[in-house]
Amino acid sequence: MRKAVSISVVWLMLGAVAVATPRLTLDREVYDFGTAMDGDVIQFNVVLTNTGSATLQISNVSYNCACTSYTFPNNARTATLGPGQSVVMTVTFRTAGYSRYSQPVFQELTIHSNDSVKPQQTVRVQGTVRQLAAYEGAASTLEAEFYVLVDLRPAEEYARGTLLGAVNIPFAELEKRLGQLPKNKVIYVYDATGIQAVQGAQLLQQNAFLIPRALSGGLVEWWRLYGDLFFVWAPGAVRTTPIGAPFYGTFSVIAASQLAQRYLYVVDIRSPKAYAEGRFPGSVRVSLGTQEEIVAWAAALPRPRSGAALFIWVVDEDGTRACTVVQYLQSVGFTSARCLFGGIAAWRAQFGDQLLFPQP
Image (cartoon, rainbow, N blue to C red; front, top):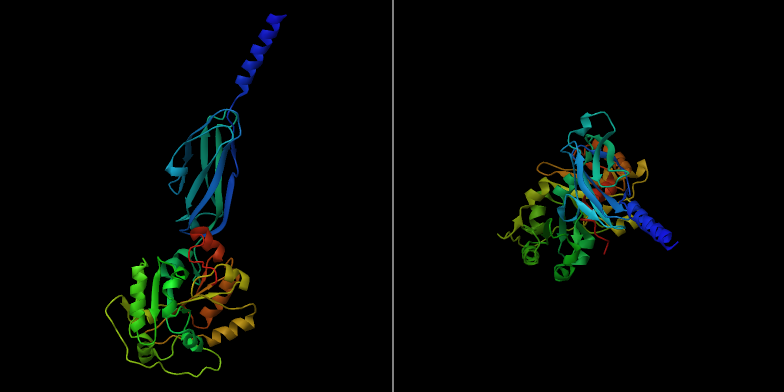
């Protein structure tokens, strides 16, 4: 009897060992990116989990196109997971050239492991890839062209009138408000004559800002060349010409003519709440819910003149309404206007919250 019991225990133990096996489970098998611009880089994560009772070995991930790649943490190419453990696999799909194919397009990656039931499992990335229309602009283009214009004058002077899209940080407050500015983008600072602007550019450089520039000669020089072009006045404000002797300086300056040639104006038409939670510094929120509002707003925009160009970017959450606005702008002569393709959602997919500052 005892011998029979012992044999049964042995067989039970052997059976337990026999059923100990790794199992690979994916948290997603398909990633649909919707619509992307030709040239966009799509990136997403897949969580791989060993839901079995033995060690899982991921030996390889194969794919048939150089447009697709993957990596595990620390740039590893393989992974070993104990029972219950997980690892994040980051997949990258480069869309360049895919707009010429029948849509939608897809690519697959095959994960090879020692899972005896499913030794090979696939992850598919799919979506529609197309060329931009003339009125659309890519997030990467806005990121490359973006700069911040900072008005260093006292708040009461700024409130009467300022250059379009300028952020007001009075010179006396600049050092304690540096956190409101991106360190890795161009920062143009100006005052009435250019003296404090040069000092402000020096302060920014001392605090590791990569590209600070002072507007040479300040608003006095701007007025000499362009008058009140790209200048906005408060309702009822007395329109006065800046006074003083322009200071041109030699340290980290930009000429007024250089700024005027590619003047950037970012218009955000999202809700006040969405705008306050994260907006491009210097962007202006405008309510453009109806065609009548679009027409009235466009009519009030400054018209560029010889030697000056207004580059308008209109952004919303997904690009839909913004592109309607920009098509109208182009029809009435603002040929350099663009809508952000895919809106803030597309920006976040590529750059996260970079440049999206909460409203102070």
